[in-house]
Image 1 (cartoon, helix red, strand yellow):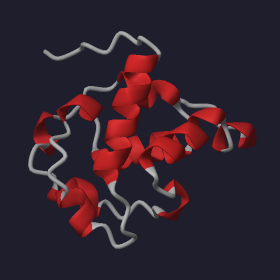
Image 2 (tube, one colour):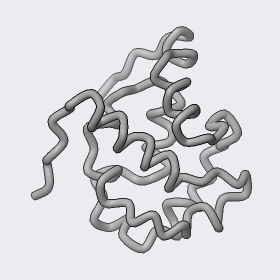
Image 3 (tube, one colour):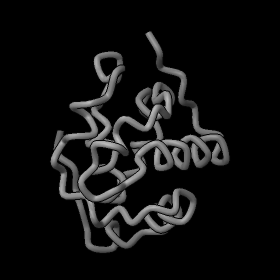
Length: 110
């Protein structure tokens, strides 16, 4: 699947809103993958936690339509492993809140 990225998407209202709600600076993530490597339920997710973060950073609102944001148990394993100190559980919480606020159909669980 090809995704078209523009510079305006990188500075979109969506990215700003997720950063505001989560209190996290998403630009500091350098995609090391440690959050995904330590996640205890990653095998149940449709996309990896670090991929969610990448989608958000690129302004891709499709992150709101994944099962991953609903499966996150907020156990903070990802946060403890992140070398940049990003609290990914707070990002997932912000994405869930945005999904509910926008009334997006999100139920895709098999």
